[in-house]
Length: 212
Image 1 (cartoon, rainbow, N blue to C red):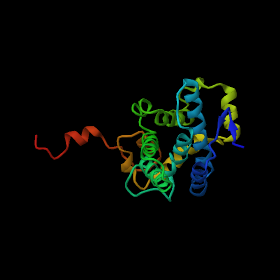
Image 2: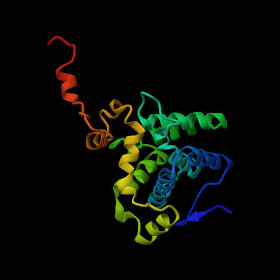
Image 3: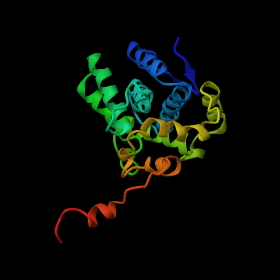
Image 4: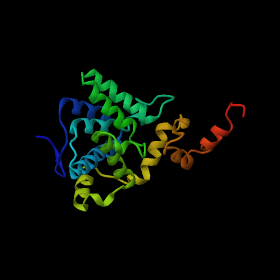
């Protein structure tokens, strides 16, 4: 019987189960609990808004959304969001999933930290963004009741998540801090990476090779 939390059914198809096994194998308890909370918080907000979405694709997107932070899936030169999206794409292709579904999952993962864009795309993409925002930054916190929040946390505990997640982010991209240029993760490098200097877009414009 499928596991149900806060009236949201956790997908248990073969595809969903294998995706969960990948995160279990290559992630840790912090990413496992966070990723499941992202699915639940995204699905809950989608349900409340009356959105139609594919729960299996939403779940797989949530499971893969931070997998690019892990050693197994981290590239030397791409944003961790793109690494996770590429890993999900390879996984879904290997299972014969239709291209349009793969594109939705790729976008959901690659754009999950892209403020001002992801929330305007398809429901699966927007709800991963909303689920991440809810769990990491408490965005729209009062949109869900305390009772619902407690049910989610009971199943997937936070365990001092606020204090741990920034360091988990840094561990995932400290070998390639340049990939955080122009996105919110440069804040993590600026706060936690000794010697890091945030690049300036203005400097890129004013000090480029054009002779003018």
